[in-house]
Length: 160
Image (cartoon, rainbow, N blue to C red; front, side):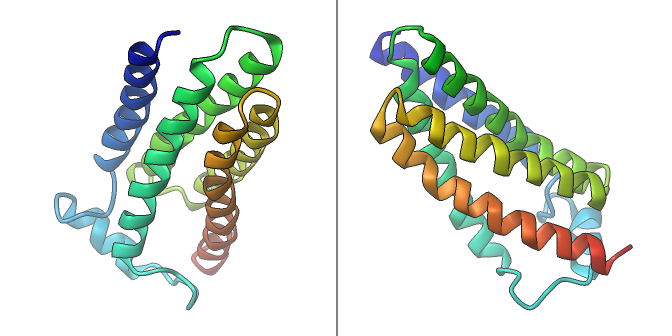
């Protein structure tokens, strides 16, 4: 895929997931959801809201960049595996918000987060065979989702 098309596809995919996910998030635009989330019992290591926003701005950028890098390579089994895992990770970005905040399902949200740990880590491993820079760009998301999974499981446990 040429540079322009790869940039467009990866950027639009990540932006669409972020925009669709934000419709359900605990933001001022969703005061009932924000109130529900504020009432949940959370561990002391829960980052403040602005940290989540800042972290996801960086992670979404890296996710789009890693997709761009992989899309630029000729179709091959390793590239297609990496691209499939990348796509599943992108789906998780928007899907988590819908499950956690739209459906208010803490257990299912923990499952989505665990799946994102697997897909983002799998992407890093698979992308290593295709494009080293894409793989490196995926590492922060893999670590963040692992942390988020621990956090989400603890929120679920505390609020059963």
